[in-house]
Length: 191
Image 1: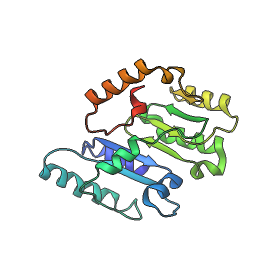
Image 2: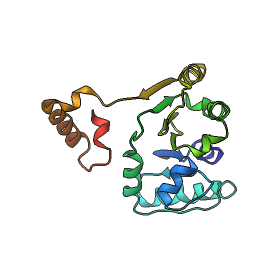
Image 3: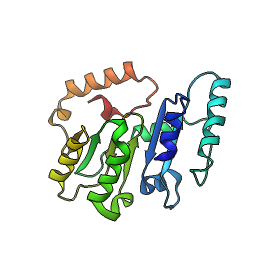
Image 4: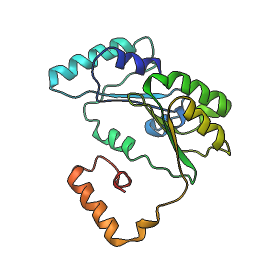
C-alpha cells in the first residue's frame, strides 16, 4: 500500500492505482508469489506518460520486488475491470481513501492471517475493496468495520431477478455499447 500511496501523493496524476492480493496477483502473472500486485496507469501524450513512468519507477525502487512497464496494457486493464464475483458470497466495501491503511489493518485483524490468502482488489484512489471470497459468517463485524471507517458494505449473494427479462437485458446491452464501445468494462457493470 505504501508504494501506491506514494504515487498518489507525488501528484503524478495517474488515472488508476490498483492493488490486488497475492492470490489474485498470481492469477494475473500466472505464477505463485507472496507479493501483492500494484497496477498504475498514466494517460496523456507520449512525453507526459514517459515522464510519469520515470518518476513512478524512481518512487517504486525502494518499495517493490520487481517492476514492469507495459506499453500495450489494455488487455490487463480489461481483465481487472472484468473481475466478477464468482463465489456466492462475494462482497465489496467502500471507505474514504484516507482511511485505507487503518481499514486494511482492521480487515487483517478481523479476517486473521488468511487475509492475504484471499482474492481481493483495492482501488487505492477511491477506497473500493472488492473481495472475491466468502466472508465466513462475519457479516456483522464487516458491517461495523465499514461503518467505523465511514464506508459501506455491499454483499453480492444472488443474481438479480431481472436478468431473465429479455427487454431489460437488451436495454443493458444497448447502454453498454453506447457508453463502452471498446468493451473495456464487463457487461455486469451495466446491469
